[in-house]
Amino acid sequence: MATPSLRSQLGRVRGLGSARSGTHHWLTQRVTSIALLPLTIWLVFSLASLAGAGFSEAQVWVARPFNVVLLLAFLGAGFHHTSGGLQVVIEDYVKPDSRRMIVMLLMKGVCALLWLMASLAVLRVALR
Amino acid sequence: MSLNEDGQDGSFIGMRTDGSPVNRPLSPHLQAYDMLQMSSAVSVLNRATGIAWSVGLIFLVWWLSALASGPQAFADVQWFLGSVIGWVVLVGLIVVAWFHTLAGIRHLVWDAGFGFDMPSTYRGGWLVIGGTAALSALTLIILVRAWI
Image (cartoon, rainbow over all chains, first blue to last red):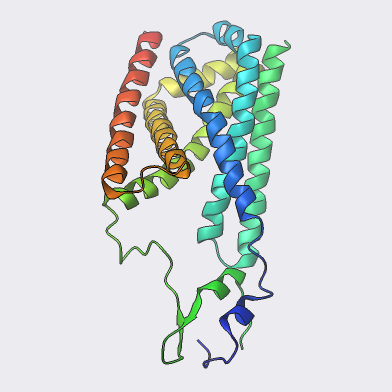
């Protein structure tokens, strides 16, 4: 650490960047978690009952309109919640700024691609 | 003043009463807190299960993609999920999913303004742990019955 500075604590943190949009992020995590609550209970029990199902049996289940809609909703809310959660982990533990930004962009990219991949798969089975 | 590589570090610089600079500790500090008490244990596990579930989502993406791709790809996933490693993954994911879900409900209860006193915190923590065990067991029974 350098010699004591006469700058005020406020002066020292000013210009280092705002706190960005913390409230929006926090609220988004709550809203997606409330949506994921029934969706997760439904998905876990549904997939557990599908254990050992054959190819066509699984396709028939996924292709049902009710399941298509809920699967797409789960994937949307799920990956949104996941990328928001991993974002906080990266903000907490990855340093310095430059590396944090690279890891953050990679994580957001992977989450977006996996979400699109899974959603496309559901739609392909549904519209087959 | 030297250039700071990390913007966040600025908010961790404090000053002692004698004016000498000091790096403020991050919270929760691993050496200052007992990580096995209910408050920190469930909090740490909530984050850990969140990360584990993020990785677990890859298996859901794999399963769905294989189902869209064809019988051979689907047989490969089913073979993996039926293997020993696949079972470890499945059981792990079931436990992780229920824990993160129940711990999430605990957070939503706090957000609504309830349960901040110590007895409620401990009761909630035990409910999360007990509920995870009960719901995981129920899910596994359904899974095994469907499999056979």
